Length: 230
Image 1: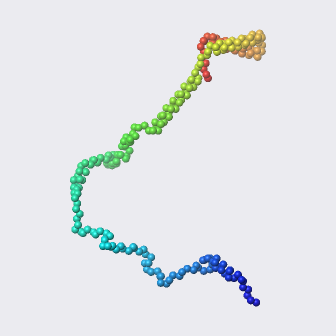
Image 2: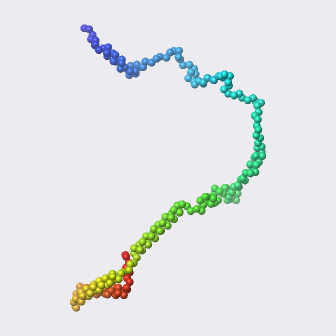
Image 3: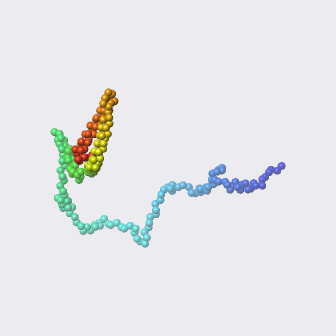
């Protein structure tokens, strides 16, 4: 029998060639082969200098050098000997360097970097009180003023006030009334104190009466009474 040939054969070939890309199938990419006449020559890859510019219209690009016999005209004349002599005469004399000798053999060293020379007195801020000390003194002074103000305020709060005549009279009446009540209770005690409780109660009333009598006498004796706020 005859071999089967598909009707879509040409279409499949066309799509395969259309979707084909270099180096993704078999074989290298198709590039142009160099010509045998364009072979690599010696010194062909070295950088080449630009061609020299030729003179145009008889004009030179660079001026001509002067001849050897040419001497420029110098109008200014300086006497360097006199100039140097004046500079040496007017120059400030060199200050002598101070040395310190500390051995019998005469070994000496510079005095200034040794620490024996008082360089600190030449400072601009020598003898000036540092800023942090001034700031600290101001803070201490402010704290002292605040402390003194608080102490005065506490003293004002704790200052004694005078008792008015009306308050003095009311206190005196209240003390006398209290003394009468305790005295009435004391008069009602039994004559015979044969128990410990009776003796203790009697002594307690006597102490209260004595204290009230002392307070009443003190208030009646002193017209002006001062009270401290504790």
